[in-house]
Amino acid sequence: MAADRFSLLAGIASDWWWEMGPDLRFTFVSDRLEAVMGLPVTSLVGKRRNEVPRSDYDNPAWRDHLDDLENRRPFRNFETTVIDASGASRPVMISGTPKFAADGTFEGYIGVGHDLTELRRHEREASTTAANLESILDNIEQGVVLFDAQYRIVSYNRRLAEWLEIDRDVRGLSYEEVLRGLAKRGEYGPDDAEAAVALRLKLLRAGERAVIERKRPDGRTMSVSYNPLPGGGGVMTYSDVTEARDRESRLQESEAGFRYLFRHSPMPMWVYSIGSHDILEVNDAAVAAYGYSREEFLALNLFDLRPPEEGDRLRTYLQGRSASQLNAGEWQHRHKDGKIVDVEVYLHDIEFNGQSARLALLMDITDRKRLERQSQRIFETSEDLMLVSDSYGRFIQVSPSSQRVLGYRPDEMVGHGGQEFLVAEDLESNREEMRLARRGEAVRRFRARFRHKDGRVVPLAWVSTWSNSDRRHYFIGRDMTEYDNTAATLRQAVKMDAIGQL
Image (cartoon, rainbow, N blue to C red; front, side, top):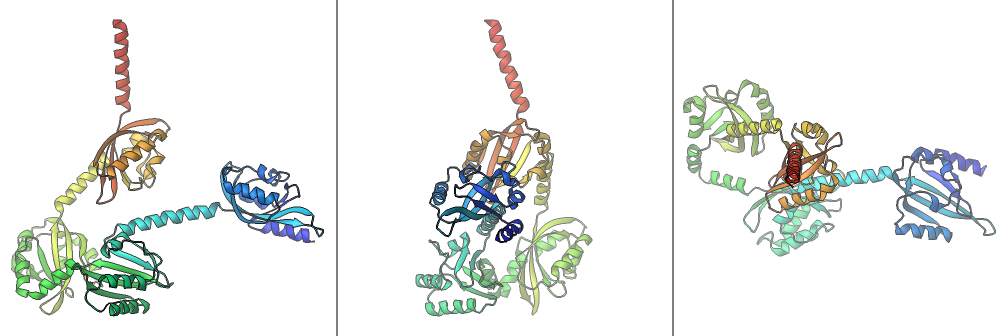
């Protein structure tokens, strides 16, 4: 009856069960092994443990495992590999315990095996996601720090370390420890250090969103916001608002000075009502650029300055926005003569003549957008292969010429690494070129061969450069197949001519 229960459990378990006899040969393996690995039970029954094919023969832990078996010791969660039915190496975890008869006679082992393939895949995906998030955090302009439920520092980015001049790893330390260290160093100025620490701890432990501003010893103004997380802990963000606060201070100091600077600014500017969206004030540059007289301009509404197709977008943008904004993005504006221009808009909330208003600064980017469109057309029509990759070598943009040169559509290459297409012998030299580019040797010229979709090798002459500003590699590759064939033919002709001369 016990054996029947064992067989029943072995049949429904998600792992596979096994038994060994006293000679350490498998006497039983549950059918689950075939479902997981594709291996029939008969492929193991009758074999010793060291006769089962695997790929980690150089693993020192394997010898310890065999020693456990020979000395009849139990083992738990031993990780090794098994070659499955397709010939692939699969990570597995094995646990087992020896069996002894009532008189102490060794009767073998009983144990269980667990497939780790999915777990390892999820671990790799999680590692990749974490690396991407870390890269993003390290390249944003804000300083960011993450706290756990006990207000210990889990992670922080490069920008925070630079701003607060943190020269050691503070992960795992409590917020209070870091605060006291900063206070001791004079981070909070001449104020009472203990009071500064107490205030910040109180705001954090309140478990509510909080925003404070302070001026650092170096003169910069920092805005610090804390947002609690549902599971405990929270995220604190440091933003350098020095420029914005200085601008506010200058406006508050002298209305006359503001009006003078506003009226004579070379950049088009206007002020509009947040409630009605009517134009309240306009400077000379905007009057000159848009073609209206000053009186005509002051009779306009924001919607009068947009082409009709921009109306819905503007209406959506204006709804519910009351906080201070900096870059409002790219828009299209309409001049009095009907001319449509591309502009980049910068906004800031102000109080104007007693009402809530918004200051708008406009930058005409029509020529820049035209150049961008031209660049895109060049990219789309280039006969040469044009690639853009991130700092990890993954393609983020591929020109349509990839299909002619390599047989792959752009979408078949985007998201993949260059190593997937490079000829193996050229992989290391290509990596070295990328490393040299990142070290400041801006333009690189080299040869590297790619594998065509149909399997043939395509020789390519590359010109590449690295952009620190957007952390991107830019490549232009020319197919040298015809050139190389011509050169080889010429060399052969010269050789034959020399032989003829002899």
